[in-house]
Image (cartoon, rainbow, N blue to C red; front, side, top):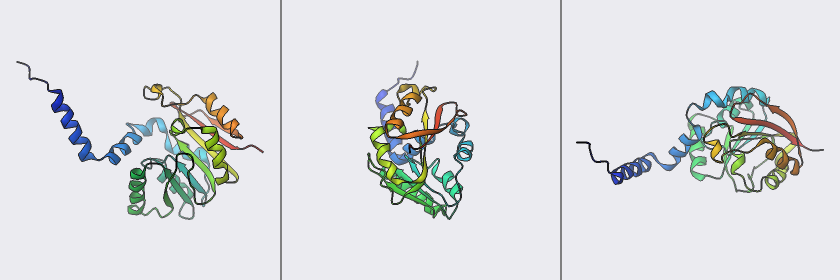
Length: 207
């Protein structure tokens, strides 16, 4: 006789698991993804950004810090990385990790949905897998120009729709990004094609 499958027991077990695991930890796991290093190619991304020691970088939508600490290594102790997110729990967890691991050059910033609230200007605004979450994107990036140093850049790594998760709406077509950034008065400087599941575009402010 087959055992009776009780949906209520399964639901209860899942609720207990989620409660014990903690919402913030689950979000961190979700942002890291399974096998992300293989398709995200983080070391190649960092090299392509050509970050200089001492640079100041904003990581918009920093989440669990997947790129934050790699950026922090790139700028060195004399540089600065602002880990920017609207999620207070993720920000606090990232700040704890930075403190525990001795990253004095990382500062977590609790942002508003329409403003990263950076405390100073930066050489690079970097965002990975966050673009599709932003509302009024042309207006958003027009607003963040005030945070860029002269000659500063905006790097956008965004899902291209190639994967099953991205095909469910978690992506932005390249032509949409280009149109919105043009509306915000940016020009594209680089279009890297080595990421299989993402666009990788770098912009500067139009003269």
